[in-house]
Image 1 (cartoon, rainbow, N blue to C red):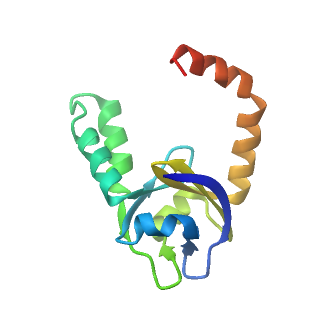
Image 2 (tube, rainbow, N blue to C red; image 1 turned 90 degrees about the vertical axis):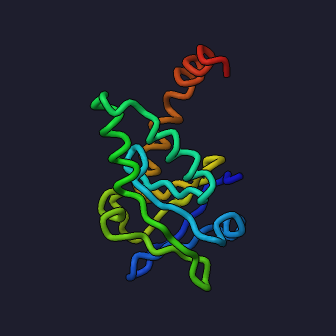
Length: 143
């Protein structure tokens, strides 16, 4: 389970450290891909397989399904931890997420998200500002 918020720098080669408490889960490798809200998603291989199976089962005849599958699958890349617990983020994913020097790695239960620090702060402030409205909508879903 991935939870929490961590500050990390992106080095000149495009590597970011995986938080130490998450490393065991991805020690055998992971999948990084485009996420939503212009962040990146990092999944364990097992969770990625589960998601990919659901994605390829979406109706091919629906444009939104095809677009979402393309977004997630075409952007995916295998990554491995180096000896210092870092993963190399491919250039195209760094551009997509607007990653510069400082990143936030956040745990979202079954995945990690990698955000440009400024984008994360802006997103978090917006979300915190509308937390009551969001909570009401979650109540409609039974949460």
